[in-house]
Image 1 (spheres, helix red, strand yellow):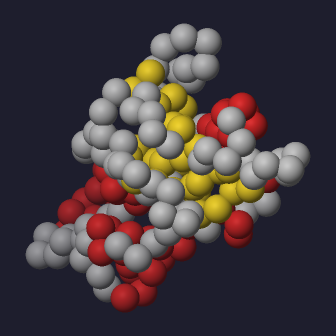
Image 2: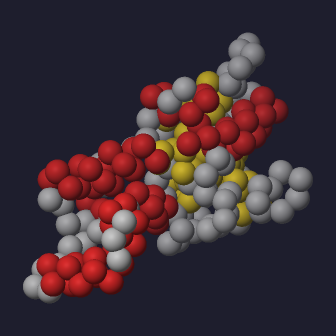
Image 3: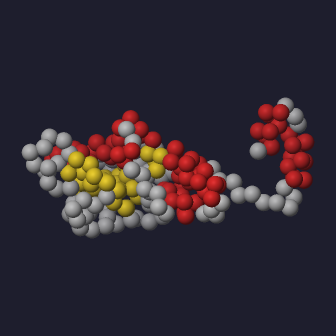
Length: 192
């Protein structure tokens, strides 16, 4: 903070530090950044865009909430609210698996590849759905705190259709287990 003030006002950094130290001597302030909200979403296993993280952060400020977790409790990214060209803005590590299979294909890694994973995950899920019509393929966002993956999307190619449909959440009671085990993160379809 002192560096930014000193640079903007063209004054000595030590002078700024002296003033800030005097001002903050009997005060505290918790400073959150958008990256803190993104990290909180990652820990919760919730896909989120940077803009939604900014909006939630402002909401925390406006309502004087003391926890980023509280701000995320009711948050759920609505895929239909995004145009396809914005899918790359979604932050998260995604897993794709077919109903009844424990093996998942992972898109993204922590902490190196957290952004721009959704387009590849969706494309792969659509390809899987086209391979076996009427059998749903699931997309979930992984929590970095556990091996649990919360179901987010269901992709299904219905017979007689040419393109899979994408629905948010569990569709028609199709989810028969919570993916908590094996992850295939190698081979030609793995994403680093």
